[in-house]
Image (cartoon, rainbow, N blue to C red):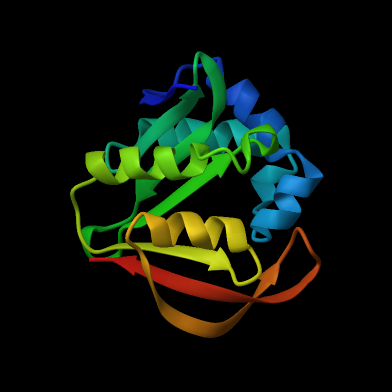
Length: 157
């Protein structure tokens, strides 16, 4: 299995929509936005992301298949990473490889991340990539779950 990152192609956005529309993936991510549920808003969001030179965004490929995306965004002192990997690729090292690749591209430090406290897989990925938990106990509303959850903050120095 070969995991690589490349620039986002127009056709990738359709695949991202399929991945990000999976109810199980939304539940696991917990914190979703309105654009996760509306294709028009989704397309507008991705047009904004792709046109912003301050955003580093890459498509994650497994062999030649689109498996997800990874990005870094925000001002230099608050730069944050995010990634979304299709559930078909969970537990296979794809998220870790994607995040390592993104962190190598994105030289700004510190980098920040947020994760649902019960999302053990994503927490493990972040920690294996050098992020450490820097905040606990914050409760946020998780639209995908319809309730407040605990969110962890992590930092890579």
